[in-house]
Image 1: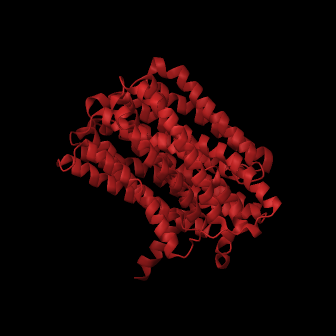
Image 2: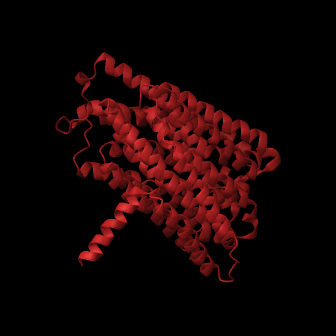
Image 3: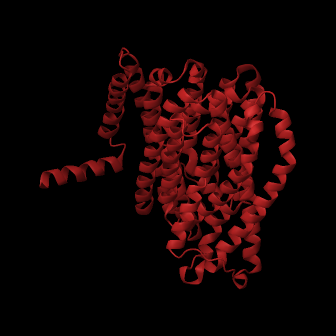
Length: 493
């Protein structure tokens, strides 16, 4: 777990720092200075670009993780792999661009009355789509070279700093909204540019093909993995983004803005999982190639355990402070309260079951993983169609909750069925019970008039109520080891 632990710690630090900046951006500033429709526009543009960017990657993110280990050779420029990846991305972007021009009149006609702002700025989808396609590819290439934490830094932290700058320029009237949305679009290209420069600096960029390296068996594997990876990748990003499109479709851009803001708080649960999955995927793929199943089993158990601990703790901090969170937001955002709850629980299930999906995806059962992802997206769309018209944004959040519970059960059960191991023990149930008791006790604390003071006291009490029993029971080996090392250093000094 050495490289995974180091990269995950770095990635998690960047993710949490980025989450704090994101909270300032999304939770504090944007609701005060932008309209709900303007907030909805920024989220809808990014969501659509992300969905179709996955399609434009042509499944090569999966190829990078699963097939790249066979190409890996720094002296031989990895046998022309980058050329193949970028060629696939170029083809994918051209197909998506053609689809954009065909779909654009329909998008404008559909939104011209209920979401005129989206119809006005729909042209920004094309540059955002380009950035999305090639960022996905270059970031996965950088990750497989065991430097995933840099990708997390530029996407989760630096990008949010740039967004904060743009918001500040709008607030001080340096930018009008038109200038802001252009700045916002350009900022999304910065992570792609920096990852590319890093790879160039490390001499990992080579556009020279190596067709002689490609035998019939390898080409067949690439097409197979790319095809099913396209389904998995498209479905994977769609399940996190398609609800915004559906909210806009059934409601309007203002409802999308409220939903997106509330949704942001739920995504905090996934921060450690995002860092760990990006790093663990490369190690698991290498272990599968080398048939090191004991290593995979160890990663699976440790990762699931740590993600449950971090997920429950994050959930407690978020939901324990929900009244404070809502007090920061304008009154029209109160309808997003239950969205925060449902999305947080949904992502808690997704977080601690995520490594199950990684194991399936990068094993010989990657085809079945694609089918599982199709089931997930159909479930989400189906529940949204059923619940959204009558329940509004609460229905969209419930749709995600129901879908991710089903998805988690399927993934964990499939790993148990095919590989004969599962990560859960009695201590995982105990962790959930400790979390429930911690929340119940904290809910008895009266609300303080000063919001900041209430957040600090409530969060501190929640932390002590949860962390102390976990440490006393020995449920966090990594944290216990870290505290022991710290104690030894203090003792020596």
